[in-house]
Image 1: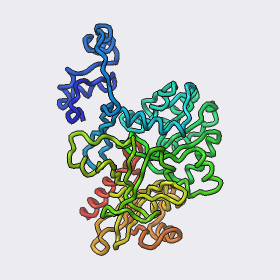
Image 2 (image 1 turned 90 degrees about the vertical axis):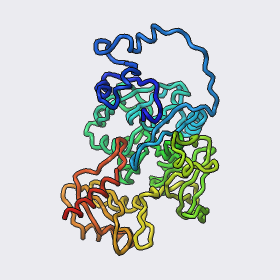
Image 3 (image 1 turned 180 degrees about the vertical axis):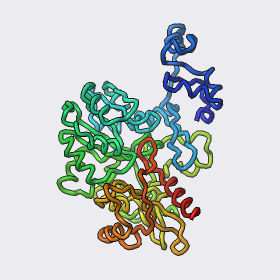
Image 4 (image 1 turned 180 degrees about the horizontal axis):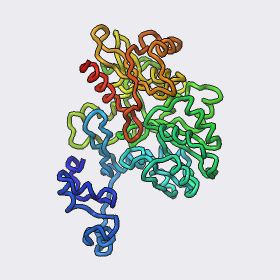
Length: 422
């Protein structure tokens, strides 16, 4: 990333100083500004020294379309891409969010997710309305609860795995969370039953589910507090949706040939709006494939229901075509998560001589490991026959990214490697 972005300066604190001793990063030691303790650093490279020694600089005037941030994608399917976000992208998305987040100067926003991830941009709206920020460098259930209490946090941005950990923390009621008014979650789907438990546990708190990409600064749609409460009482199916599009966002759904599908039918989610990035840095081929004539091709498969709620069915690359039928792995995973003997599950496609692809379910068992026949029989009650996994791999833990997304490629490779060695 440093090479790709041609960084001139690296700002670094004590915890990461050893990185600069590695041969690959040695050249950036001469370009580093340190924000840690003086006794470990060269005086001329500390932030305090530079601030005291500096003189004023001329005013730099930025335009709406000037690039504000080069933010890299996760790279779960390859090397991360630098996304060129403009001032207009970031500020506009903050204003789009303001309608559903209702920020004010009394808000305190808790940052727990890694700051390199686009979800942190959500906090821009809090800054714009005069609120404050609290940072927790490392997640732990107790650490989050303590800082929510001590810092009187009003908005917490969490990923589903973090919320699950909080639910398993026995001392939730020991903390004063009266100021907390909103828990915002996203980056990965959340099981409906767990979401209901979370809403019961934090009954005075509103919940938002956020859907977006780094390329959209980062959000396209929100399932807001009102929709959550309505879904729980009236329409549970809405809990599986990503909510309604943010103001100014336009969406189309296209088939493999680039034609618009019939209303309500699944297709690739293609969007336009003021939050769509200027493009990728130094990636002309991928830029041309993803950003086309003002439209962003997200790589997600989804549809819009009759009430205007967006349903994200799967990543295009995760959809499995078995025997000519499309299977959305999220749907299968949702069913597997309802099995009482399954703690976690992920579904991937693997090569199959007869059907082209077959469904493999990677299962993290609960207290007792269910057998394959039992799982298949359970799935028959909820899924059509071609959607039921026939291959299984039982694991202790699912490989995940720093934001809780399952690294499905690693599961597929592990299974195929095991088969090859048999």
